[in-house]
Image (spheres, rainbow, N blue to C red):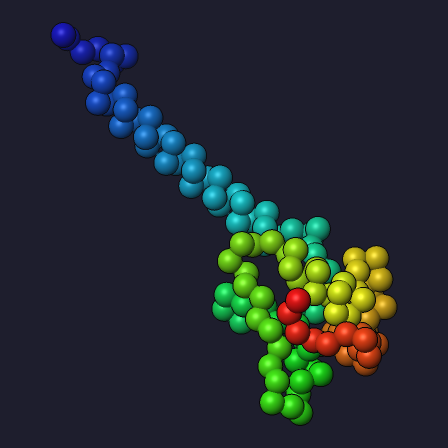
Length: 125
């Protein structure tokens, strides 16, 4: 079979296709990184949790346990969602996406005294 500029062997077509798919995936990954780093729709949990590696720790619980031998529970970040963090804020500190700004100071740091409720303890469910 003679080859012309427009005729490719099967292996060349597959290689070209894989190359194009690989380049497309790289472009999509780069775009995703740009979008996620400049994301405006952030969760209210970012104000109340400290990230340390693969875990997030509640700043309010850490403040409450400062002079004790207890430690704040570390919530895993491997799944990439904030469901458990939101549930912790709601159940343990009565903080929701509708009222979270009431629990922040002028530097957007949590005010632990406002988030303490005598009927709740700072520990996982």
